[in-house]
Image 1 (cartoon, each protein chain N blue to C red):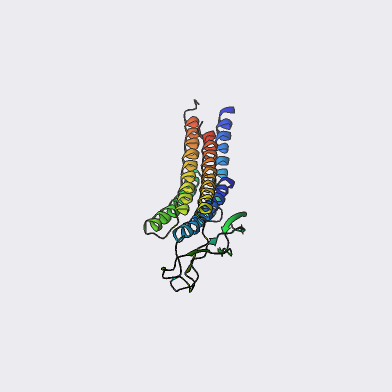
Image 2: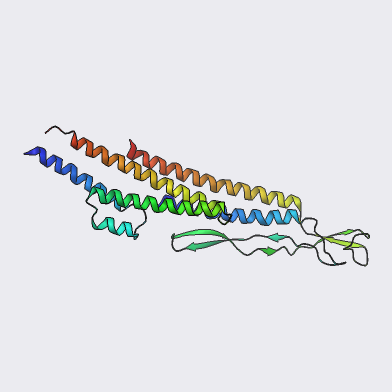
Length: 136
Length: 110
């Protein structure tokens, strides 16, 4: 049934956005995670990718989380000579996580999730309206 | 005599509705095959529809149990439950319609 297919497709969107939320929360939680060794690298920001995937049983293209890639941009360097992770010059590398970008990303994930939930609700309303023909 | 032929037509219509209803839902299940073999009988139709609805119900039950055990995705539970809901509502609507047709035949003055 096509309407049940729409629900399954929107559900794949929900799953993908939930996975994205997980990566974003990982980034935000680790925004201050420095290295444990002096001069070592801190937490590196992760970026999610999405990919379109053919579901043969369903006969539709679903969305799936692609590989989670590290963000190659530079770390922030702060001068904190007393820090356990400081190198010989007293510089500490902090993660390349910008909280503002993460906030924007998670708003985006939230909106996208809501859009998929709206699709599911609209589809269920269509199923109910179709059944109303039989009931009248 | 026109009246029995009208009643026969009405019955044929109900049987056709039964055929259409038997084609609903997932094809290829054991219940679906059994229903297709003898779709013209009302009992077989109801049994077939009930079998499909029960199957959908079992799926959503299994998902809910896995969810409570912390093994399932919430999205899977929601989709399974809404699929069951649609199946149950379709079955109830078809049953009501068929019984309505049956009653209108039974209350036909002969």
